[in-house]
Amino acid sequence: MRRIAIALIVAAAVVGIQACAADAPTAPRPGTGGGSSTAVAVQLFTSDANPKAGTCTLIEALVTYNGAPVPDGTSVNFSTDFGTYGQNGLPLISVVTTNGSAVTALCGPSAGSAKVRASATVQGKTNSANLTISFQPDASSGPRVSSCSPSFGPKEGGTALSLNGSGFVGSASTTRAQFTANGVTKEGVVTAVTSTSVTVTTPGFPELQAPTVPVAITLTFNASVPPIVVSVPTCFAYGAADSGTPTVTAVLPSSGTNAGNTRVTVIGSGFSGSGVQVFFGTAEATVLSVSYNQVVVLSPRPLVPVPPGGSNLDQSVPVTVKNIASGIVSNANVNFTYTPPVAITAWTNNIQPLGGPYVPVTIFGQGFQAPVAVDLAGFGAIVTSVSATEIVVIPGPVLIETCADITGEIHVVNIDTGDSASNGSFTYVAQKPALTGVSPSNSCPSGSPCGPSNGLGGIPATITGVNLPASVANADVKFGPQTAFVDAASSTSLSVKVPVSSASVPACTGGNPAGTLTVVSTVDVIVTDRVTGCTVTAAQAFQYLVPCTVAP
Image (cartoon, rainbow, N blue to C red; front, side, top):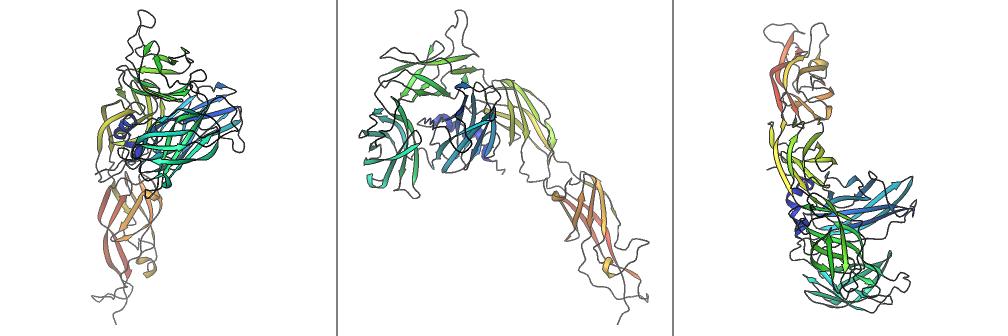
């Protein structure tokens, strides 16, 4: 059976993005390495910091320049030391911004920890941010953190913090809890561990100056072999409860279908633990969980008239959070886009050679939202651009089993939501080679001196035909059982060195004098394209001729 790279499994694995039990947005301190500029600020967020191995998690970079969103089309370069990005199946990807935001999806082939880095350059100034994603071996039974209690504590530390969830293992002595605030990491004291909670005494950060500072927490369960590392949602902050004005920084995913009920993580700060309301435009969402830095909701149906006589169907609407106790409402500059269901209506260049070279394929339709994953006849394509109605891709590598055409549907998945569509037909055509000649056809061509040094091979030869391997690396040529060295290759001609025969110089027979040309062997010439697996044979197309010697 065909094996498809993890970038191509997104169509199946993307369900895991929506099914994870705990959303874990993380906004680390912008990178401050050599050559960085404080004029450019990069923040990284994720919909789940602890996804199940074999699935994908959304990653969003928010980039500002002097406090304002960077211009649309600014490139953000993402890299990772584990896993690949869903749009191209590679550990590196460049995504352009819209309203200062660039979104991708990181897919983990197995359990492991991924260090994600995003960098952006604006007007010659560069900055970056880092984020850790821990792919879990079994998200259904492994450790998961769903909430913190309390959500706030004094910067002097000493708060008895309960991290609630499931699947915790070990004891206080085998568990570590690290707190990171403003780029500084300190150890908390783990006092108790049960299967559903970890109790930690928070460390002090007396140097903190801001009234409220969110904290990233990392739990390490050393009772497991190997140890299990869990990136905890930023559900705890140093500061006073319900302090400050609610602020929305990002929403993941940033789009969903008009049917509503998309699971959305609203990321920001100042969300009240005593209760919030979340609005998509004027439609109220269903709140699932609240912490200082995040609210998890189900998007409402977009049927509230805005303005009267209209609706939110297919519209981009602001997402706002209201702290119920104080009545304070957040900013309204982060939007969620309602989309029609994904549909594919037309396409170009849907017939291409099995071994390439490939030309871009344009897919037309509706409801497309970056990031997307596309496969053509079951093989992943490299996404180069996405708009609501058009996707451009390059066919990706194809795992070939036989020299035969491969035909299948065109398939598109919105990685944000898992909404997908299939339509049409895409064919990788096996361009079967044919041979028209081998020149010379023997090792002692007319007019050339002949002896054992060339009669047993080593001479140049040209093989002509159609649909031959177009590169030296792809061409495998045999004269009988022996492999020839290929000097040059094109689709119509191969230049080779005839391999040396293992036969010995024959003795003259039939009364022939010494030096009479004698056929040592007649062999097939076989050409194979290493990429497509296609093979063609010119039967008995070459003769080894050698002058005979007098019989002893």
